[in-house]
Amino acid sequence: MPREPAARADGGPAPRRRRADARRNVDALVEAARRVFATSGVDAPAKEITDLAGVGVGTLYRHFPQRADLVKAVVESGIDAVADAGPELSAAHPPVDALTAWVGRFTDLLATKRGLASALHSGDPAFAGLPGYFMARLGPTLAALLAAGVADGTVRDDIGAEDLLHALAQLSQPVPGRGPEHTRRVVAVLVDGLRV
Image 1: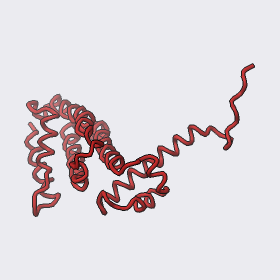
Image 2 (image 1 turned 135 degrees about the horizontal axis):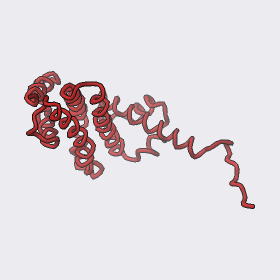
Image 3 (image 1 turned 180 degrees about the vertical axis):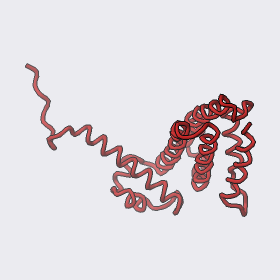
Image 4 (image 1 turned 30 degrees about the vertical axis):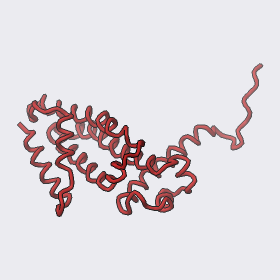
């Protein structure tokens, strides 16, 4: 008869609970870092992030050994949130309204990324894969939103997702002396031009 595995010290299914706890810790750290980076910049003290996340500094460094790892995770989580919003918006709104709402979220993501710009353009190899990740996650979502609008006759059929992402990114560049409302207004003109 095979031997039963040794009982765990905590008496429960420890590996699963640890994985769930670790996932919660990572999620809390990424959310805390997003908030702290937005107010204090990417060079904010680690303790400010861990205090907000409700974890210890050791937990931060266990999951994110370098600051660049945490910055990358914050950027990727923002990209994921915008990508995941596409199907939800499509289910809740007519195609052109879903596209418009999604572009608003995308523009907000780019505005948030401005605070991380110096870190992202630092040449750190940790960020080398972000442009590919950006296109891989956002391109298909935007393509589906455009296709739905084209199919129901409310969106032009002569622009692709990649071109539109690049155009939106260019329009979202900061303009000296102008705030986010300027970007939203200019992007709204572009989105209006997508309508049939």
